[in-house]
Amino acid sequence: MKNLISCEQLSKQDLKELFDLADVVRANPKKYSNALDGKVVTTLFFEPSTRTRLSFETAIERLGGKLISTENARENSSSTKGEILEDTISVVSGYSDAIVMRHSFNDAAERAARVSNIPIINAGSGKGEHPTQSLLDAYTIRNKKGRLDNLKIAILGDLVNGRTIHSLIKLFGLYENIEFYALSKENLALPEKYIKIIEDTGNKYYRCYSFDDIPKDVDIMYHTRIQAERSDEDLGKEQFIINKEVLDKFSDNTLVMHPLPRVDEISTDIDNDKRAIYFEQAHNGMWVRMALLLEVLE
Ligand code: NCD
Image: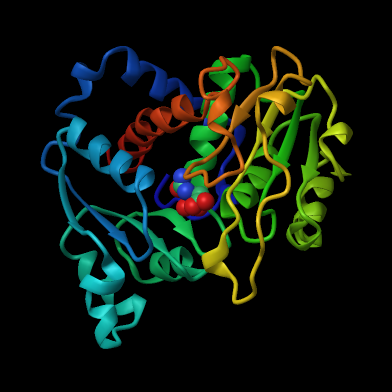
C-alpha cells in the first residue's frame, strides 16, 4: 500500500492482512518497538483532531519512528500566507517518509498524493472520506462479532456531512449481505450518491423514520455528530438520541458505536452498558494505525 486516500482502493485481502497484523502487534507490541527506526512521519492537520492525530502520533512513537508535526496546520503553517496545499506537500515530502494529513477540502488527500513522492495517509478530507476511521471501525466489528459479512448496521446522525459514514459505506461495499438502516433528521438524510454505492455494491438500504423502524436485532448502531461547522445553514439539534430507554428496546447483541466526539446524540447513561463500545473503538485506532504505518513504511 503506498497511499491511503479512499476506502475504494482497499480489497478484502488488504483488510484481512491489516487486521491480522494489528492483532499481532497488539499481542506483542515490544517486538515492534523499533520497527520504524530511522523513519520520520509528518502529521499535518488543517482541522481539529484529538483521537486521530494523537493515535497516529502514539503509533509512530510506539513503533520507534520519529515525528514532525504542526499542531494546527491551518494557523501555524504557510497556508495562512496563501500557500497552496500542493506547495506545502511538495516541501514537506522532502522532510519525512510519510504524511498523515487532515484537511477541509474533499479532494485534499488526492491533491496531495498527486504531488507527493512519499506516502499520503488521509486522516479526514472535508465531507468526503475518513478511511482510517473506517478501518478501526471494521477492525472493532471483526473483533466483537467475528465477521464482517452478514451484518445489519444502523447509521445515524449527520449522513450528509459525515465523512466517517461515507467511508464506512464504501468499506462495507466489500462485504456480503450488509443491510444499512439509515435514521436521521430529514435535512441530514443520506445523499442519493451513497444510496447508489450501497445498492451498486449489492448491499441493502432502508430509510428509517424512528427507532421503531430499526430491527431489534440490529448488530451495530453507528451514531455520528451533526457537523455544524461544515454548513452555512443551521443544521439544528439531533432528534434521535440513544439513551438507556432506547437501547433497552434492542437486543443484548446490539453494539453502539460512534467515531467520537459525541455531542448529545448518545446519552452518558449508557456508557457503562457492555453494548456501548465507542471508547474501545477509539482505543483500537492505535493498533490499526500502527499496523497501517508498518504496511506503508516497512
Ligand atoms: C470524526 C471526523 O473527524 O470526521 N472524528 C474522528 O476522527 N474520530 C467525526 C467527527 O468529527 O464528528
